[in-house]
Image (cartoon, rainbow over all chains, first blue to last red; front, side, top):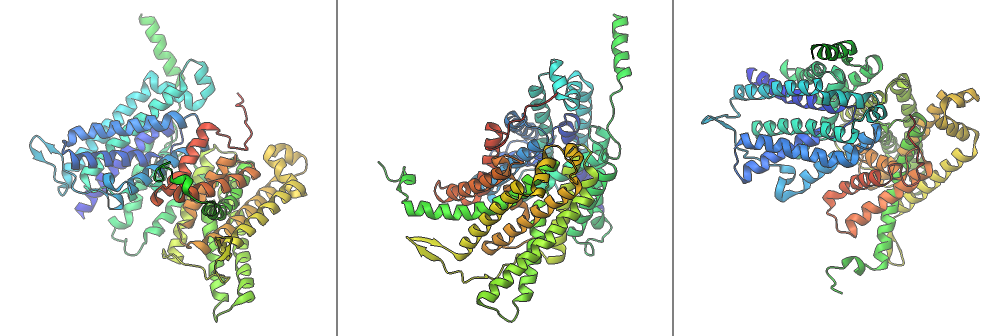
Length: 307
Length: 315
């Protein structure tokens, strides 16, 4: 029981990182991306492949995985981010399917459908973090949740973050204010991808097996739903959305009902919630935080006065 | 010329035609499904993500009726008539399903942001595919051939009766739809609604009714494609997802919102997929990559699709 709760809390942490980072892309920048699971997968496979073949330490693989995901974010972003709305969603979906296809079929590198096992656990000050001792990973994951939360919060409070929000509100107006919209969109996309890659890397050492099946379209949709349920463009919203959706999906298992309630039934409820929410509360539980212009202008006025 | 490096040119003309026919069969199926996407996009400007799942549910109902009707062993013309009956039943069920889904899940969202109907559609597709898995089981099933499926030999080409049937039905329905949209009153009302809903309703078009008709036609065409697809492949709760996605790609390639474009895109995609694996030697495992690669290429080169209109952005 305790073991199950620990597992749920660890995976919840990973989902929160994923939904926080997608929130930057979809919620704040307004780019409807359906390939977040692909970045997560790229991060996980980078760690898995390099760990098995080179034996590098996890603390090196973690940033490498994030960077590989970020670079793929740039590679996908440059051509596709010219597209808008539904078209962007479909293009990113297409990219995600290609990634999954490659992961499933490139046997010599990714092990095909069987995936990769034997990923080495991280070592911290000579102490090996054994995946069976879940408390270690609980701390590790939530440490990165905190880092992600504060980094993304700082980004959104910066000039860069305000530019992203301007792009979401009105791209043409933003570009006429001198914002290089393509550049900002690609950077936002790759920052989101970076954190998804980090989450993937932690997932790979924790599980410690990666198979292509998990990084599919449904996962991307689930992450997007987490962001939307909590409220697009709100860090706390992404956190709450991820918690509600993931814990609700695990509830039958936690309460020991999983033998009675089939996973399909669970998914049907998820679909129903999605439809009902879109009809009655499309802004999510917390809703979008509207920028407080008076405060913004007040702050810059104060700066003027003090100078 | 070295024969191994230029294997493409070593393939004789009969083989090329053989792949062309296989591609045309697959492409016709994609085109029929793509029509539903494109008609809905034309009027409502959103991607009906549940389209593939509507196809799957309708195909299941066709299969069930067909299996019930043929118990006791029917043959020949009777078998074929029963097959058509089962197909019509599946079309009716899915037309109804499409209309009901539109009224419940999409209609309240007409004025909402563009994200809302998209996510609602994804929700519907999750509900449908999991309900199918829950009630019908995840095991995949197969249709009994309604015809004696012995291939004809035609100048060295081998064509199965099912392929002929597929190609014939697809082209018949596509031409029928083209006539319906171009020449009839309802078709004109559909075109008017896709140009401008407000003006169309001022002109006396009942836009809600037109949208319902659009969903009914699109869903019925998709089930026809689904049943024809199931004759060659299998019926399973996930059959709609990938087929639906590829049909959507076909719609984008041809130009979303353009009916001729959907037909052209579907056939093109079917032929490209067949040639990609059979002639260019792309491994079968990467078959799905061809479609998505084509999608990304077309979005980069001509985002409005081959036959799409280039609409300038208005401020």
